[in-house]
Length: 362
Image (cartoon, rainbow, N blue to C red; front, side, top):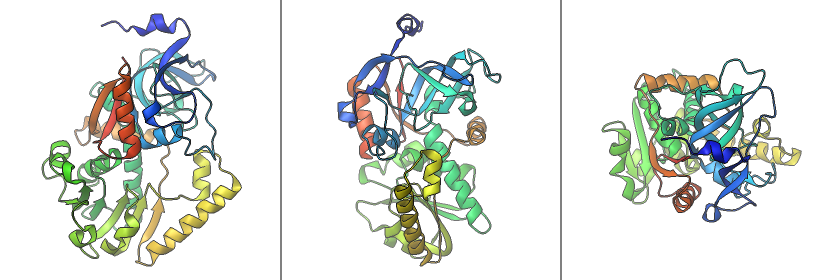
């Protein structure tokens, strides 16, 4: 089927999941906005085929980070996308028009859930033929986050992760499902424990594979600490802001890596410039949490995901080797505004979804 977008693009506009002001997903609409253009000799223009929506995307759109970074409106939502290069800057040598690529756009830029997006060439990885655009778009933020978190745990734990026990709450979330598959197939952990809601219990084997998870706990009906036991877990990968309530399950000498807690001020500054007072507050919060975890004889670390194309290339290799494939729970067309709103709202609320939510740019 011919791509209907070239004639539309000739007007200099495109369809985009874009908002005129900070708002929540229930108010999202598909709008016509100005197409992005190459503003740097290292930029490339991508005709987007698919984009995935992450919790941070909806929170940026809701204004949750406006105290550090003010969005420019209309603000085009989304950071993870996969598509085909249609134009390259004068200094781009490693990519040409026609290359299929995927990427995570900068937090301060966004625009993935649009017909076209601009990225610096240094942020791109070529999509292998073995991955669909939907699968590739589901990878960047969630899988990078879990890869980098497991790398941290592997480095901080004496003897590494192999053979160890790992606790990953929210096992059917985007980051949780990625971590479980990577922990089992790449990092070779000994035991995986996870939590899901009551209605998702039968979905664990369906989406992650029979026997991938060793212990699944219904967090709505069971006491997690009692079910896991005292002093059992080597690495707690905190995907759901639950680690402080579960410290009793940790072994002495264990490690907690959180993606939901306050990072150091200097870490935040690398992602987006933060005011001095905010950085000081972050440092205090980080220090307090480190002290709480340290009282249990454990190490504390907070991860803020940073794009590393070397990591994306590792992940791509794992997909080709059959060790990993992102869990895509729902896919909708950009033209279906109601489905887009419902899917984004599930991501924003953090309830009801499975794996990644992907929007096909039709």
